[in-house]
Structure formats: C-alpha cells, structure tokens
Image (tube, rainbow, N blue to C red; front, side, top):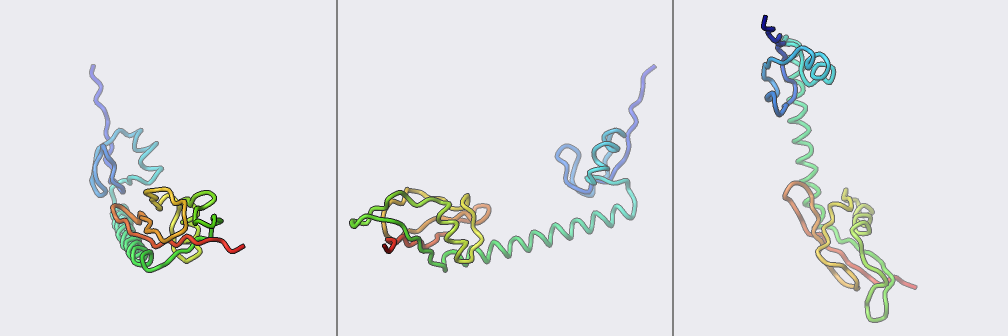
Amino acid sequence: MARTKRQLEVLLLEDHGELGKAGDLVAVAPGYARNFLLPLRRAARPSKEALRLLEERRRRVVSDARDREAEVDALAEAIPATNVTLEMKASKEGHLYGSVTAQMIAEAMQRAGLDVVATQVRLETTIKEIGQFDVPVHVHGDLTVSARLWVVSQAE
C-alpha cells in the first residue's frame, strides 16, 4: 500500500529561495511548516490576518529601504565636502614614522561627524608621508566617493 504525502498550504511572509516569493501560497510538509516556517514567522496559515501582516511587512521593508537610501545619499554628499586631518609624527623631510591606516581615517571621519567605518575606507596605496590625499570610501553597493585627507606633522 503506497503512502501519500500530506501537504500543508502556507502563505510565505518572506522570500524563500526554494519555495517562492513573499505572498505566494505554497504547499509544504506539515513538519517543515510546524517546526520551521511558522515559528520563525517566515510563513503563516492563509487568512485575512496573515495577508494584513504580509502587507504591513512589505510597507516596512519599502520604508526602511527608502530611509537607508536617503542616509546613503546624504553620506555620499557629505564625504567629499568634508576635509579630514590626521596629525602624525614625521621626520623633517615629511616621511611618517609609521603609516596611515584605514582605521585612523575612519576614526578621523567619525570625529568630523561622518558615519564611516574602517571597512569602507579603501586605501589604494600606503600613505607614509605628509600631504593631501584623495581616499576612496565605499558608501553602499557600487557607490564609492573620494574623501579629502590631509596628513600633517604633529606639533612637538
């Protein structure tokens, strides 16, 4: 006697690679729904309440994306407009005792009011002398802007 597999229909609340997109009605094994999808709120049993939750979640995602895009645009405009200065110990010839790191640049940018972390700073060459440098800063996605960095000799 062949056993037929029972399936349970659920409404996906999030995109799920193998199953489908948010809003799709899909059939899954009851154990998968009961033990994974439903407790983690990745799916819900089809109902008006589930559809309302799905629509609310979609609005929130769109709103968050719009807010993030506005933050990214503001940061992309602020970085080139801000001059960042680092004071380093240097020889009389202008050679630094050490080198400028991405962490140092990020901290200087944070002191200037920019929300930048060291992983966003993309040093193309090592900075080992006093001067003015254009440093690429990865803002988001494929958006990279140049920050103006001044490395000056530390007053003794």
